[in-house]
Image (cartoon, rainbow, N blue to C red):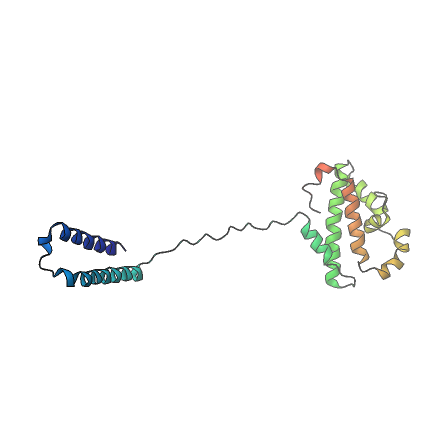
Length: 190
């Protein structure tokens, strides 16, 4: 591109010089050669421009790839996923999932009761006898023996699509959440 510009400027300067000092261009027959000289100059300038353009390795402006932020999981999502994987029919894999859910909920419950001043033994007694909540479904989740409310709910269990274990776990989470002071809820991971 730069060479074509230089060639164009040179042709213009020669033309101006020929107009200013006609003796410099006396050897060129004026009337017949001017169009031929202009065409030749344009051809040379165009050829130089094409050659420069083909040989140029320019990189055009390419916008940077949009920045992507890593997706951060919401606290408790893994617990929700684990609880959502519990199925209505029993299997060995489902029993392991239920054990993991029960262990995590028990750890959370013991932590909640510890903030209320209960010892671990007293907290385990509360969970075992179900006296820690008024919700019979939540109490049935941790209770060692079946409660009357759990027995009454067996007929309902036949017609619900949510497994009783999942329903009781959700109710236990809600009951534990209700016992947790509001300032502790922001960073809890069940």
